Image 1 (tube, rainbow, N blue to C red):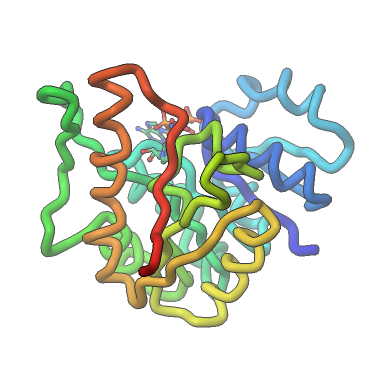
Image 2: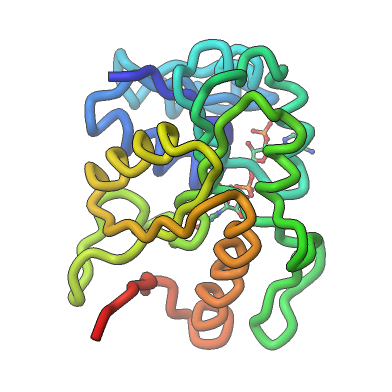
Length: 215
Ligand SMILES: NC(=O)c1ccc[n+]([C@@H]2O[C@H](COP(=O)([O-])OP(=O)(O)OC[C@H]3O[C@@H](n4cnc5c(N)ncnc54)[C@H](OP(=O)(O)O)[C@@H]3O)[C@@H](O)[C@H]2O)c1
């Protein structure tokens, strides 16, 4: 089992860190303020650790990036490119802009010609980014139980070995997978977050998931 770094002290970081621990992985969570996660570490057991972003990135053989979209590039800088080189980076982030939704529709700070993951891949070319978990609510990220069967996780990235690793994790976590190809597909995957959030903002429905179905 690879050692997992989960970069992020928010709810996504917690859910995925707990999910990896439940599946038997060793996990270090990264944050600018490790003391903030002391309580989580105390409850999470012997395979759980907490450190700075840089310490977690050094520890992880596989990295989960679960930070605010506006901070994602600076968190990669805090990790240091050398600690990310050659590693799979599971990119859960969404480029949500710092303004309120309009009629339930979020704004992004990116364009349809350049996704956040493309920016991240350019910032650390030696890391192997795979978009995943960005189009799912945190409550359903690990072993979702849905009436309609397993939901679909839309993923993409330039590195087939990294995607194979992420696909194996997603199968463990109870997901069907739709691999949409290279990093540019993040231009389509990231906005699924906007779609997913609309029922939440308009009618407080946050327990749905997306599924690809065939004729
Ligand atoms: N919430 C969901 O259900 C959901 C679902 C799918 C995808 N996502 C995406 O997953 C990511 C994480 O979401 P979240 O709700 O767990 O947490 P969040 O509040 O979006 O992000 C929290 C993390 O961002 C870091 N951060 C914030 N500002 C920073 C700055 N200026 N410099 C460095 N780091 C900074 C924080 O660092 P510190 O630890 O140092 O405070 C913390 O670790 C987001 O990109 C979100 O769009 C969320």
